[in-house]
Image (cartoon, rainbow, N blue to C red):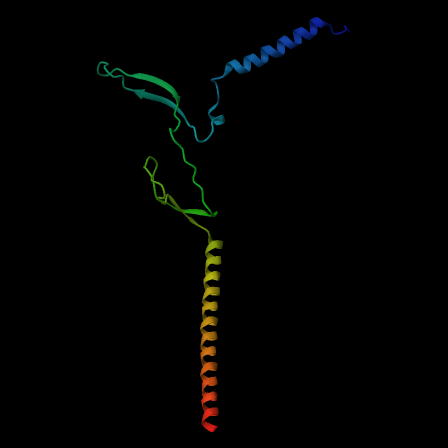
Length: 148
């Protein structure tokens, strides 16, 4: 067996650099599966050239990317129960784009409403008891004055 020399190290480095350059320079052959979902590849786009004769066209291939994007953020999680806009519609700030359904949140709301109703009943009952006790105390005071 030969002992590795400086020549071998340089040759190995040159091969590694060549392989790296090959992958870097390949560039444009990205498979469609590697393209993020937000960017979909387009087979062909027909563009009409201004000032050209009728029937002439320019065919180019490429990718189309949205000029503007907006993230939709919800304060709660849930299942989308309705979508109120279609692709390509203009939307304005504050417009309801979709409706979410979350049975757990609806159950919590029902429980909170029941607790609120119960608390209101307790307040009404306490107020009635207080008024009745004041009336009874007033009657007792009147009876005491009447006896004196």
